[in-house]
Image 1 (cartoon, rainbow, N blue to C red):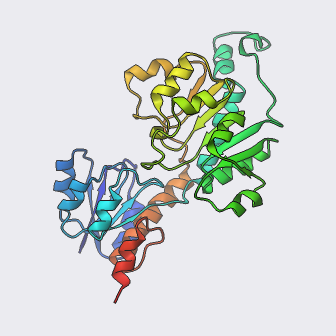
Image 2 (image 1 turned 60 degrees about the horizontal axis):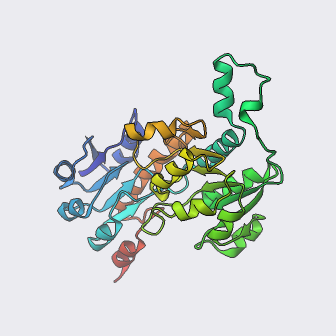
Image 3 (image 1 turned 135 degrees about the vertical axis):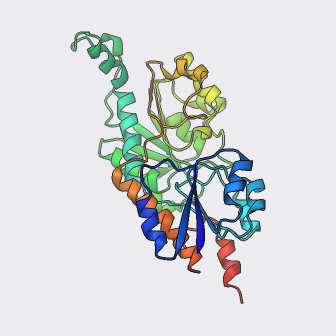
Length: 329
């Protein structure tokens, strides 16, 4: 019987995983733990790991005795040492398509809320201010004809761009890894990052967290942006230098900020002051969520494990070199 460890997942039910994995005779073991030593103790003899947050470090991976797959309940795999897993012949999978609509919808939600200053307007009404008193929120500008810059033009970035165009926004985008025809077919102009930062009235970030993207939006990048720019991040908190972002907010050198992700989640007490600024609309890393997306995520993550333990190639393999080696004669 296969042993599958579900690690750090905080979902209300695992019936779907149990149903999928019972078909291959797998036994589920649950471990809500955090330290490397605790993770090693729980996973050392696992045939597979289903993980939400991790982290699955090189030390953890080196201690795995028979693990064949690490299946991540996410699009991003920044909590996994993929290089170490590849060296050990362990497949790493993600679920890259489970929440494209949800995250792109949420990005537009934060863009609209920030551009229309919803945070300030709604709080004033709740506090008894006149609904006709618009002076405290001036200026608010019409969206139609303004320019949205999309940083990262993968599936979510492209979906967000298409939805933004329905509001009459012109869209430009930066991504070094996406084919040029995907920009042109979407009616989006591909530009260098510096040009996007200088030109955009609104910016939405949709890149994965990698060594290259970590801190890619920092003090220099914020200095290039318009002082009225609306800046939204629904990707990963550490893509943005949070100290630099905090500085532009505190100096009020930005039009508005929408955040679904932070460096540390939940935020540290020292971060609450700038997060509570009237310039900031923040949500608790929930852009991915809908009931449909949750079911897609759980099913696809479990199916990846079932496939790997049944000697089938899973649908989304992050480190295909492992599968390629396994298929060699």
